[in-house]
Amino acid sequence: MSTAFVAGATGFTGREVVRLLVAARITAVAHVRPDSPGLETWRERFAAIGASVDTTAWDAQALATTIRRLRPELVFCLIGTTQKRGRRAAAAGRSAENYETIDYGLTKLLVDACVAAGHRPRFVYLSAAGASERAGSPYGRARWKAEQAVRTSGLPYTIARPSFIVGSDRDEPRPAELWGARAVDGLLAAVGGIGFRTLRDRYRSTTNTVLAGALARLAQDPAAADATIESEDLR
Image (cartoon, rainbow, N blue to C red; front, side, top):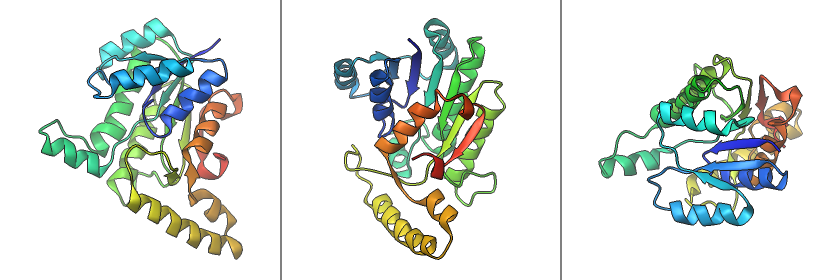
């Protein structure tokens, strides 16, 4: 039985990845921040489906020790933040929470921890469509930097680049994102009808359950090793 360490396990996609790993008889270790206000609730939820919870702090040395102890064959990095969360963190006087410190910074920290552990798990990174060094948004540029940290780490990896991720069971409503996804999907349906099928398939939305299924499958697929998987192949 393989072991998978899932960072971002409480997220919209992460929780579904954990569920699917357990269903596939993989030992799933769901990482939850030790200061998470919902820690006990998540312990109960994950225990109910047969997963365990790890609460190692986001510290490179501590995470390296955990990875060395668990020796997972798979490490999923499904983390990210939003501008809204960043504003809440600033209002509460917490340290800066933005795309640079979370989407890139914590990904780089987890990559470095795996390398320092002397272990070589498949590192599965959830990026985003349009990630690029020249992306027009800080989000796209931070995701690109995170991708580069993964690619240059020496670890085997799989990078996934979905477009909008939608679904009915988000903990944090995102009406603007939902309406944006609907608008983009409508436009893409139109351009797909006149021949631009690749463009349509790359940027149309997907659900967290479909995406999680693709991540769980690709993580174990030898053909997806050291590969960047675009949105059209995540369905």
